[in-house]
Length: 192
Image (cartoon, rainbow, N blue to C red):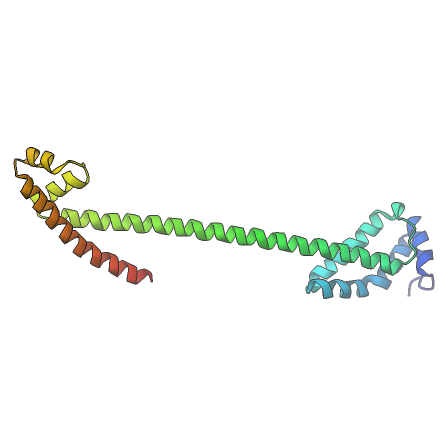
């Protein structure tokens, strides 16, 4: 039992305002448990409630010289805990928003990277299938699709007819659609 266990709350506050460490200790011992319980009911976390009550008493001691006249110590302390709980809840909501935004950023970043990897793989498949075309057909196709030459320009460069150029491109597209379509279908099935 402490020396001040018989003092009432108003007397303890006056003594606390004068810097009496024993008065502070007595107030702490009287209100610690009910305030922790109150904080726990509001936060749902015992450790957080204990920390909130610790902060309240720390503030009470650090500001003991500036304390206003307190009529009801319990009401004053409960109000301090309530305000800290509201700050706690607001802080948790901000943390949750940041965590969600960060997770969205990570998800989008991974998604973008995944798309880039798949695009590169698809381009490699297309290049591989183009390389597998018959030599003359491949040459015509590359001049058409990669160097953007017209059928007439290709025909003049290779000394073949425009009709032959058109047939090579048509045949190359047919082969590529078939082969790349199957590869893409297989890749999609692995992805999903």
